[in-house]
Every structure is written in C-alpha cells, then in structure tokens.
Image (cartoon, rainbow, N blue to C red):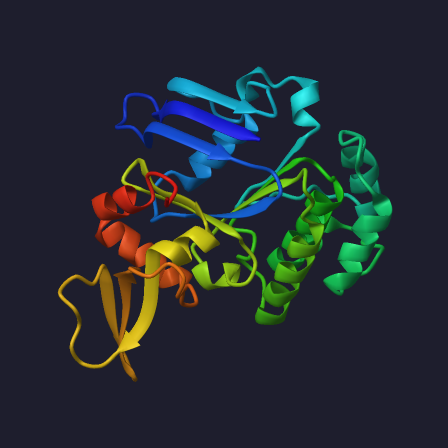
Length: 282
C-alpha cells in the first residue's frame, strides 16, 4: 500500500515538480502512470523508492517512510529506472549478487521470464547486450524479486513490437493480490490491456486516480461524424470521423477506453477531470 499526503517536491530552489499531491494506491492492481514531459512521473517513482526526499508532506510505503531507507523497506521495493546501467559482469554473477537483497527472489521464475523474452540462460557480459536485451533482463529480474511494490519507469523503451506484447503478458501474469505494480510510460498504447487503474498527473498536480471500470462509468469514447458536440471533453479528427471523449450520462452503457484520448482529454480539461474523479460515483 502506498499513501502520499500533501506531497511537495522541488529540485533546489526551482518551482515545484509536484505540489500538494495526495494519492492512495492499493495492492492487487497494475497502475499506469501517465503525464507529459516534466510532469513529475520519474520524480514520483523515485520518491516512492526512497531515492529522492520530499520537500514537504509525507510518503508511506508498506508502513515505512522511504527516505529512511530501512532494509525492511528496501527488500519489498524494486525500481527499474528509465536509464539503465548494467555492470560488466556475467548474468550468473549479477543474479547471485543482487538476488541476495530480495528474500523472495526466485531463480526459477527469473529463468522462466528470460525464456519468455527469448534470452539465453547464460550471458557473459551484461554490458555488451543491446538496450532492449538489457531491459528484458532487468524486467525479468524485477518480476522475479517478488517484491510487494514494483516500479517501472518507461520499461518498454527499447523493446520491439513482439517484445512489448510479451511484456504485457509476463507482467499481467506476475500480479498477485498482495503486489502493487506502477508503470510509467510515454508510450500510452503499450499499456493497453495491461493496466487496471490509471493515474494522470499534469502541471504538478493529480488529475485522475481511478480504476478503469470507474473511467468507463464517467466517460464515453466514441467515433462521431463531422459535427463534434459542444460539450465534448476532447476531439481529434480521424479517417472515419472525429474521435471524441464525452461525459457518460449512462454508467450502465460503457465504451472501450482509449488511454491516449483519456490522457489528452485530461490535460485539455484538467479542472473538469478533477471534478469528475474527485470522489467515487454514487
């Protein structure tokens, strides 16, 4: 479980990256963390991992304060950053060295994930692998740690299309009732059919934190003709008409969610989105 209360974070004397952010995340879910460049996604994940410290406010992760960096906290959290730096050692040495920090690490699961990504079980030098291969190794390792919190920042960067599909399969299969997974990405479509909750931050604040079923209750994603309703939250032209986002006045009649359009609607109408998702729908 992750709780952020009135969190503010600044780099030195610069304007806040995150300001007065309150957020509650539950285990048993895969959260998609969406935001524009500079919105604070990576900073938020590093704050949760204890790699950055809040300027103000509080963070609690599994009843620990991340900034204290206690061993009991560190063994329950794995963070995969966007920029990875793998050491010049064999895969076996890496697993022996790093796996010791995670009591629930499973070598059998790790080998299974490597095979799923079509990687060999023996690798002489990790540093000699391509970016995509190194990403696959660290994704496999992170999943195999079986930590209760798994944070992945832009994990699909460097993966080809078949590997992205495999990524969705292995991550969804790795979710358990006591595990919380957060995936941050600019490649919104990479999260299709994977996440079950979405968090949108923009301009230093939280716009949406909701399970996808609640998004379906609140919003409709439709393809209309040339005329766009005046009350549309977002519209973009397509070859078949206009792809629009509208408020859903009939929560029993939902439409498939388009994450890219959801994000664009959120940053186009931030205050309306905050109002729509500020409290559970009666």
